[in-house]
Image (cartoon, rainbow, N blue to C red):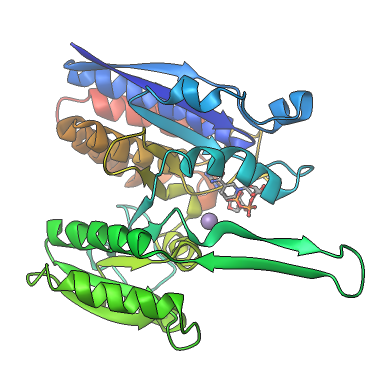
Length: 358
Ligand code: NAD
Ligand code: MN
């Protein structure tokens, strides 16, 4: 029997609560399937470690996890450490060196959940946003000089490389092709940003020639927010830069009912390094320690992890179990207007997995 080795990095805040829940559900899922096992190695990397030792992860941290089959990540961020220090010290310290350049974010309205878009029903909103995850606006290039003086200068330089844009564009066209509608929207801001974004447009047109069976269109990012809210039915697969897709995917999560539901995969498609799966939400300071964090985003991320590991049957079963549970309003956590706890939802998903009629 195959055993997958997964590095679990709960991180901070509700990250620890939802990863505990995710580990329980993934073990239950493997047990139910009976054809594979999952061995979790837990890493205490995060802000507590940073405050104790000055580093979020050990010097050889990436060495320790580079042989794992995948990474399950919670959240990084605490109120008393600046967010950019945390982000670059932990999450990006894994994503960047492991070249997880494709960030994939599916959005659907799950059964039992109401979208804030009144006129939209479940099947009408079924999107996947592909976020360029290695360069662009979050390349880290830039600096600050003359700190505190009137002439202080700060720059963040957006880096767009032909290699980087081409590979994410190909990934997005491949993904669009694999979905029933074969429809891709390329989002840029090439009217105002006349260098990098124009390169995106040009490369999109070049790559599109290799995909005559995929219909594609272009959209400016500001107009895209309107299309997502007013004409969600016209969207299927979306590709956008690191910054634009970051923003659009939070909007997508909210339109699907709650940030607590949304999953994401940080993929190294060539599999030279492990890929990382995580809910898109953060540490949620306002609810941490209360036991009411919605674990569905982590469970759905687990579905994406099982797909990536090559266990489509287990992935599909887990997704059905999640949907059975969301369909029951008595199992909704407070972010969805309900009164259930993280433990209630976790137990219910485990029960659904075990059911004969799932
Ligand atoms: P957040 O996602 O932590 O919280 C935003 C709101 O959504 C809060 O009201 C929160 O209670 C709610 N929420 C989020 N997840 C939920 C869940 N699973 N169940 C129920 N409610 C949920 O975003 P924020 O407040 O902007 O950030 C808080 C901290 O998290 C910051 O330090 C930030 O840097 C960090 N953060 C980390 C990541 C990451 O590690 N990937 C992502 C986003 C934010
Ligand atoms: Mn974000």
